Length: 291
Ligand SMILES: Nc1ncnc2c1ncn2[C@@H]1O[C@H](COP(=O)(O)OP(=O)(O)OP(=O)(O)O)[C@@H](O)[C@H]1O
Ligand SMILES: [Mg+2]
Image (cartoon, rainbow, N blue to C red; front, top):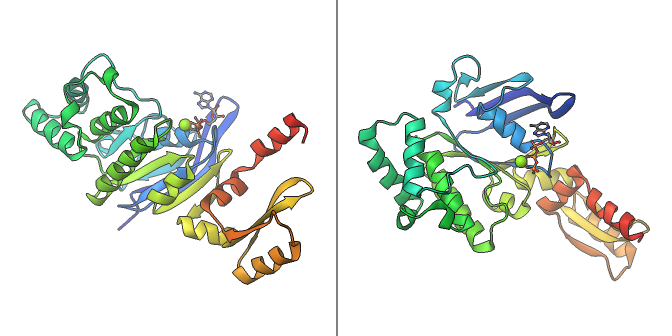
């Protein structure tokens, strides 16, 4: 079956600034797809155009076989979105927020109660249904936002940095929920800059850097593209990294260094991410500290 999202040559400009620069994306039906990139890379902008909130400056998007042009109401019914900054009304209860979303999606009044009960049972939110959103912890607020985004039974759920700022327990709670939703058939598109999140959850990922796609594949494929074996060591410019296709090559290089501080190890997704998006922060720190 065709991919659920196909985007070609996607470009988004804000005035003179190009936030997304001619990217191609394919998301397979039924997968958890990770969109990884540092602050300002273009993740939220891409999510906005894929979810019809913003029109691209150029490029084509087809979602579940429907081009994102002209009348968007049919395609919008296939999309659920949890934005980076939660947009729930904090002064009313979870149930009342769900009701507002049901109205927005024109869900028949006779179905709202059943849908609310079903979705809250699925995301295990029932005990908090009548709590004010303001009184919920960060993790439960995210769950409430996910429940709202699922009320109209979308085929694709977009989660823009779903676990940013949450504690470890809440992150794991949300990861488990994302897995359950995916097993029940929802395609997940999630943005993150946490590599453990991508490694633990995602079937495939794309890395975006400065508006361009740097690489796409399974986390394992991305490590293989760089070289499966990593050697890190102290060089003249600080910590340095080299990658090798084969363990033996890496081991020979490691041994040639004869250094106590050198490390021979497997390549992580974090290495791929840092090589593709830059280790500028480390370089900047060294400059500031004059080391
Ligand atoms: N409404 C806007 N007007 C002008 N520039 C914008 C606007 N929204 C985003 N940008 C710029 O576009 C670029 C991409 O922003 P975007 O929010 O898509 O990045 P991001 O990858 O989601 O970052 P973060 O991890 O911080 O959420 C950034 O340089 C940002 O400053
Ligand atoms: Mg963002």
